Image 1 (spheres, rainbow, N blue to C red):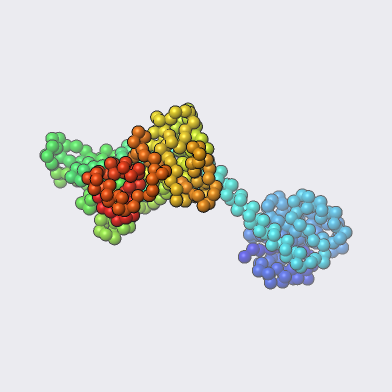
Image 2 (image 1 turned 60 degrees about the vertical axis):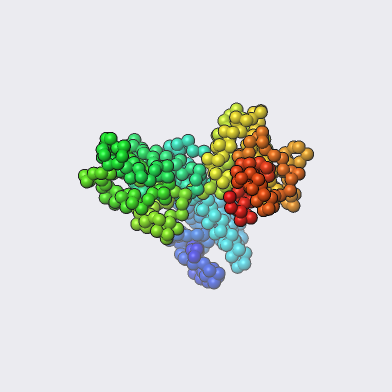
Length: 483
């Protein structure tokens, strides 16, 4: 509830104003002198001041009210003030309005007019304070980013900005962080930022892709192994935890860690202790663990594939990285970064790149840019350079206008009844791509016949139907056809 301060030496005026304002949902404070008013403004959270111009009997100059106004302005420059004045002090009221008074009213006042002014001024004051707070927060954020090591990350979206802000905030601590998000979205970049801006930035930073390690060697890779611990182990070797001692260990694809490894990992996180494979000697390390996964660990916990206690050890703070199609403002900055200064994009190509959903995220986008640069016939890259082509019947990801091909040229299609969107055809060789503009959509029977003719070789079946392998797989799934 907003508090309004009423300053008037006439108690009847104070009572009348208080009653009117309280009936309309405001809290009021009243005082009868400038000294009391200044004290209340300094001590209380005041949303608005309604002040008289004279406080001493038989005084009509308005100088007391003028001094009070400037004193309040000096201590609270943004606080809205409504001047109550007699008609003989109209010129002085106008002067104070020019100096920043929010409004003035003559006595006797009109309740509706005064109430309307109060509501408007309080709303504007609240908005002004909010904008000031946002401006201060933005200034602090920009200062933090200016001094931070962003490890070359390129972004333009608010979603990515929030991720980076949070990463910089938690980088200074040594708590475990779990980075979640789809493959290729940039989880490793966030891990780089966490380490580069932490107190451990000059210490070891060891990265392990759990999904890339053979299961039978996983524990040896993480915790080390003694000579003879397994076939081929001719000498003792340290594990990644020992290598990262005093620094940071990044465990990518943590959802692929088998249960036996999860038990050992839990123990290291709890105590810092472990044994090398084939050894009974307990070793101790101090390591900050950052992990990442594209898996739904909550579902894995429910199915018994992942330990719940380990999840809570890893997930002290979670950084959730959205897919690229949910941060479309990142797409063009990333493309410009990947293609370099020697190439530019045509406008239809820009629209196509933003419209496409990028299921492979930043990794797919980077590969598409590399392909475009290699195959480009001119410095201005086109849709064909990126392997993009119009596909009818699909709506664009967001409000970006879809791309259509007409009369051999590329243009923006605005007819809502002919909405199309681009889709890449990275798996179709340019020499063998088939134009399907005159071919009908293959039926389930067509696909089954083609599979039989080509002995189930997907590449040949896709070529015969004029489809990419991905498009063929989608249609097989649609018709319930198994290879």
